[in-house]
Structures are given as C-alpha cells and as structure tokens.
Image (tube, rainbow, N blue to C red):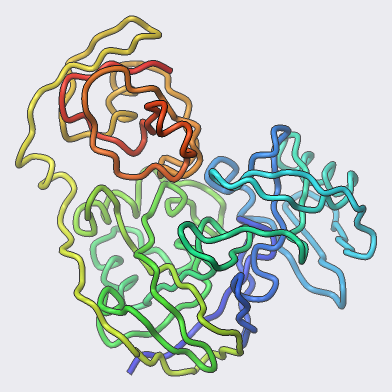
Amino acid sequence: MQTLSDIYIYPIKSVKAISQPAAQVEEKGLSFDRRYMLVDKQGKFITGRTQPQLTQVQVQFSQNTLLVNAPNMPTLIINPDDFGKEMKKTQVWSDQVDALHCRSDYDLWFSDYLKQDCRLFYFVEQTKRLVKNKQTQVSFADGYPLLLINQASVDLLNARLETPVTALHFRPNIVVKGDFPFVEDTWSRIKIGEVEFEVSKPCSRCLFINVDPETGIAGSNEPLATLEKFRYYQGNVDFGLNLIPLNQGMIRTGDEIQVTAAQGAPFYSSQLEEQAGSKKSVEIHYQGADITISGNNQQLLLDQAEQAGIDIPYSCRGGKCGRCKVKLLEGEVITLNNEGLNDSEIEQGYILACSCIPLSDISVAH
C-alpha cells in the first residue's frame, strides 16, 4: 500500500519548503503554494537555479501576514493588506502572466539579500495562467500544479550515491511511501483523500536538484549525473510526477494513494549508453563567431558550444526559459523541448540550444 507521508508548500517560488500535516488542493495547486514570485528588471522570474541562496529563505505564516527570514537579514513582514494595485506583466518560462506588484520596500529587502535588483509579485485571483495544452490553471510553479515524489525511489537513488539526498532536493509538494521504487511510473490517475489527480507527465530534471536544500550550496553534478545513468528517456532525465488535480478538496498525511488508472512505464536507459550506440560526426557552424567545429549527433547543441568555447547565454538548461535560443539556418536537429519558444519564433526557425541535438551538419546564429 502507498500512503501520503509528507506535504510541502513553497509560498514564494524557490524558498525553503514548509511542511504541513494537511492541505487544501485547489485548481492551481496546494493553497498558498508558489503564490509569490521574484522577477528581475525585465520581469523574468528568478529561481534557485540561478540564485540558490533563495532556498535558504524561510517563510512562516502569522495570521494574515508572512514572516520572512534569511541569513544575515532582518525579518521581513509581508502583509497583503498593504499591497498596491499595480498589475504588471511577469514571465514564467515562456508564459506572460499579469500579476500584482507587492511593495517597493519588499523589493529592496530581496534585492539586498540576493545582491540583484528584483521585485516581488503576487498571484491574485484575477491572475490567469494555464497548464501547457490544458484548460486548467497553475500558479507560479514551473509548469504543473503539483509534483509527487516516491520516497522508495529516493532510497534507490541513494543506494547509487556516495552522498545521500532527500526528497526535498526535488522540491515536491507531496511525498509518498510506495511499495516499490518507481512504481509511480505506471500511474496514470490517482486519488488521495478527497482529490483525484491526473498524472500529466514525468518531471524532467535540471541542475536545480544539485542544490542542497539545507545549505543552499550547489553540488558539482550530483544527483543529476547519477540519474542520467538510469533515468534517461527521449532526451529527458525524469524523476517524479507532475500532477493536475481534477477536483478540489483536502489531502492529509497518512492518506492512502489509490491508483484509479494505470499505464505502461517508459523504458529508461543510460544517457551515455544510448548516445554511444549511434554516434557520428557532424559539422556545426556558428555564424556570429564565424567558427565551424566538429561535433556529433549525440550531445546537446549547448553542451557542444560550451566545449568549443562558444558563449550561448542560458538559464534553465531544460527548454523552458528560452534564453539559449538560436536560429537554425541550415541542417536538421532533433527537438527535445521547445516550451521556451512561442509559435512565431518556431515558425522563424528558432531552436533551443539546451534542448536540441544536431542530426546533420548545421549552421546557427545567435
């Protein structure tokens, strides 16, 4: 039998998790989860991927306010009653989201802590953001309302690691105790407490999971490097499940996980082994630098550019932010993810260097 062992929310995107014995599930996700978000001067969201010290920000609820603490910082009190009325466009990956700017003094507190100009925004009732290709709402979470992690799968991963990790490395909303590692790969629909969930897709992982939630320090390459050895599928390294709630209601720790619909599990393999099987050389021409290098049809374009000393800006390395976009002038690539591009950019021939692999000789511009 599988049971719900832990429930977590992150009131401000990327801050330290708050453990709860129970939670109200809403269409957007758990109540109070990722309803606040920091953005840079261009309105683009800021996360622990580029600012890992965000994971050391602690949030507590006190009646209608949030008490925010961080190392070497005074306590910040966030009071929704004091918010202004300025709605501004913010950006989460490729989504443009109208959200409420909170207060300039809150901005100064976070800017001082992160040593970066930023502003704090709130996901108000009239804010709208849809799950990709779905008519259902999601908050400031990366892409889906909830993330599920199976503790048994974490335990199996730890058996392969020199330094164990916790479920919190993967920033879950719900942690379950399953009968077997990766039994969740076969789940298509589940029910927990009063709520039924659709399993949208496995969660593809990025460098953020290498950040230790206890210290805010990013490890050299673990646990992502180990996951690449046995959880690789169609260009992604998967760990955990993205969930979409089908109704609203309460979930509580100790609730049984009822699997109401099943599916076949993907066939996972090693990224290195899969690449080695059909490797061939290709030429990659970078028009801006007027450089042509000898590459291959196995590695990501961004990785090959970095190895050649070509500077392509990036952030997420997961195909979501769009920062590493380049224009494909000649040749073919296999696209693993293009969430960070809009329809117009795709029509113009733009690709994401972090999420495509050359299939032939190519020429790109950035």
